[in-house]
Image (tube, rainbow, N blue to C red):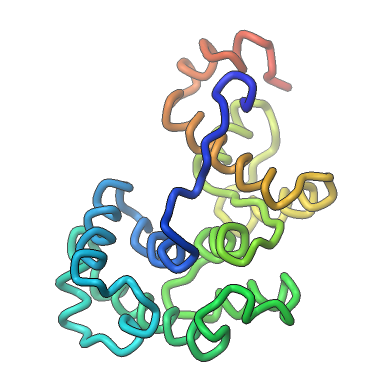
Length: 206
């Protein structure tokens, strides 16, 4: 994929906190809508963990309305921001003393942070090795003939240990996720995948 598609530079952002906010806003919506909410926060100079942690709920909901589910996302953003400020000093390095499994559990304990969002944050904010078992990955693995358990937790449970057993670095894993998602957006169904460079190379296992 890297040879055929080139590097993706994923996740595009102006810093780790923007990634954190974006990972919440993108849940169940398009990137376009999430970007509209990010732009609204930036326009008001409020894309800051201290600002969001203490922001009035109604004000935050109005700013992130384009992302949908704005009541739950508002609560998730405020709780995540408070945790980031109080637990980490508003710096990824503030969690350096926490091992990967413990950090993931802390993230999952926050309101509105599920497995995929937690793994996004682990990899792209805290620079921990992780496999993001999202829908694009599941579709690709299924197309390639791999066993793909239903649901994020089961899929992650099978393939995260396999991924961590490789020599892929944090940078490699960031690019791997970006390539999987960009491939999935370009080749949306099995027919398109079959006509893609992976299909032409006979990559299917089944």
